[in-house]
View 1 (cartoon, rainbow, N blue to C red):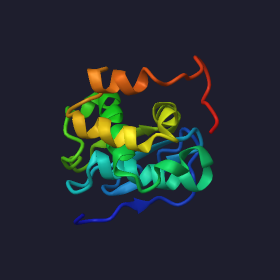
View 2: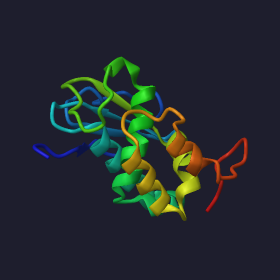
View 3: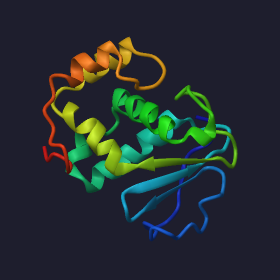
Length: 156
């Protein structure tokens, strides 16, 4: 990684966008979301991994996904679909300088929670897939084995 991710101080209020547009900055918000401002160096995969590591310190639900490349890749694929303004499909391509990559922590928790005790299945699924998360056979096979509540985030 050419440049490191710069954390922007304390957790910001939901509408406090102060400093979010400085390239290379990672800003966390009180609503479990974050924004990374692209710097032509950091990828969606790296930004998502940084966020998962940061959140795992405060939320035990995400501890199994700390420093887990499959989790960051899976999360980044999902987050890219939510960041269509970036017009990116590759989680390992650098986020253009000044572009904002939004990360929704609540969605990441819901996406990853079924894999908390099944990290090998997550790694296997990521190894079999490329591109976005589109309900392909590999993800359907793994997710089909998962029972999650229709609302709320399951506690592990």
